[in-house]
Length: 344
Ligand code: DAH
Image 1: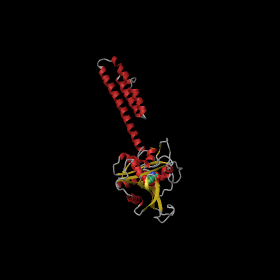
Image 2: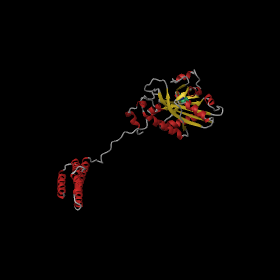
Image 3: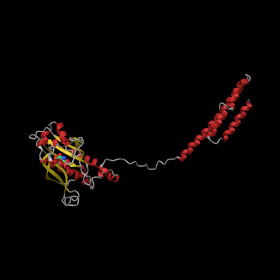
Image 4: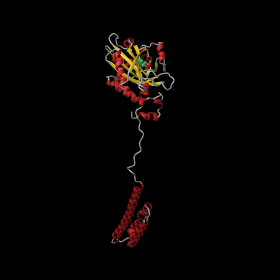
């Protein structure tokens, strides 16, 4: 029996030497060490041995089993090592290769211009307010001295949702909302940026959705010269120190007097060019002294308080500042357009 075991060991080790891969090794493991293998069989037959023989043969059987198991394990380990080395060789990574740049988003040019305008007014002590885009007729028109059937309502073709609810046609309703919230306290010194909607046909200079920034100041003894000085300061910070403004008489129902504000053309410095249609001036906003009725309707006594207001189109300002020729560029999301503003 002892000889048989020794022979088994020799046979197994020989076969082991020839095993070509891990699968083969696993097969050998089952063949020699498995439940149906020859060693198990020998151990099972131990019952027929004498009491002296039993421990001796048992010992030999265990040694043989251990030797075969060790042999298989060593060989497996060798293959594993070889496999790892092969992989390491094949899958080397060149850590010096430059990475692939991922495209990153950037702030939209319109938002950049809004932020720039906000920063200028915040620097002059203003706070930034917002209001809803879906607005009531009362805030959008009525409280701005535009009663129903007032002909000036035609200046702003509107998207109505119901008879009393519409998409706001300008940011001026935020003036009213702010005054009513402030309940007669002073000073009021706000700007409000936001989207506005008009039933216009879209073309290079018109869009049914565009962006405005409204300004409102109310205090004691606010005069037209305060309006003029504020806007002069604003345009110089926005377009450069050399920029001038001029006020032209105009009409808005919510201001009296009203003025349209022009800036000296930043393309030609006022000499006359295609952008300013040879006039040297570009219109950029509407403004005026807040109408006494508007003050009164929202809780400010026009005998005691006065104020000025203005409203500008952000797209127009951005187009002039950056030489953009078509307002639709702001909404069509062509990356070639947007990428030009990543680093401004
Ligand atoms: N709301 C006017 C518009 O959309 C712009 C405007 C003009 C606003 C004069 C004002 C203002 O606050 O005083 O055309």
